[in-house]
Length: 246
Length: 246
Image (tube, rainbow over all chains, first blue to last red; front, side, top):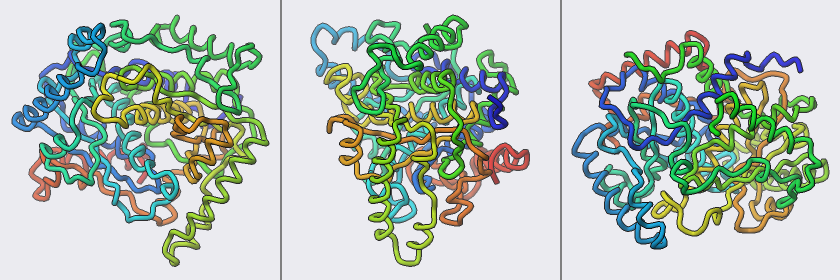
């Protein structure tokens, strides 16, 4: 179909490349400095995320001081010990062996937050679903993550923290929500697949099984929807071409 | 700096182009059908979002039946009336004039959900911050949105609904969270800027003012951080080149 707003084939491929080759990086950070120019670009990408009622509820708290990083790492270590005990015994050792953060190794740590009071109490689009502002800050995270991938930067999202303790270490008032604590830096390599998939923790789900039609639970078990076959074809084609991970 | 994982300049530009030219589309949908192949690609993009503990908590509920769309539109209309009364009187008329959804016009509606029980009760990375699974589904939304922009498709996120009513109309159990109700289709045009910015509802915030250093509230009011000037330079350069909106 003729569509003047579609990107060229090469441009589209670049966007998909960023999406399919983005990884949650934990163990491959290099100490190389991230130039301000590159950091500025990925922050601009984050700042141009969609936000409910255009409230732009985010702040970007850059953490580079070794002392602050060390405190954050301490919080991680404590929460990680607590977390291990929550897993069934047969999974606990596997859990403990996983590398789940790169706080000290990554030259840049960045906490993306949500200030729920930004732009006042009534926000267009947040009148009924109150979590919409949190979701806006998550969109900023994902924009930054994809831009970072295009810049050759790895990003890892660390979420194993006691939240009030993290807020305290970062000097954050209780009403500011730390949405994502990100480790950012250049990397020795990107993995082909998510590490948890490779480690056999969980498999990639078949996309066609996740699609419902017009009502929840109405799956295309008979293969009558033309989309079902197309999803399988696209999945195979992207994998065969090495664009999406197998 | 030499970086073998960075995309080429053209590829990077394409990724930024998708980020900066993405819009929340409400009023510009065309009735043209979206080919299954294109829909399959943007769903694949969503499915390759990061997810906490690789739980992939999302489903994709496609809504194409006019009757279901009409019911969803009815829910929007009711919530929208309620919402108008929440705004101060001087903003109420402006609010009422805004076009905030394209449910009936867009050929595809898509509800992206979060199944919090996917992969069991204990999830790596969700042990302490319980909202992480919701955030994963939001990342899927943003991946789809950027892929859609590259395909020349508009996407609009509608959030003015009573959530239990929306779940009922879509046949969704109470424990499944409808993260985003999206309208998707080709468009007559994309706006240069967010509509709420153009309408004077709120201004774009200066990015440099949103950055803190090592502690919450520690802003670079003295302009001593080299990043501050770089952020302004990058913002101006991207705007001058017509890459980011002014």
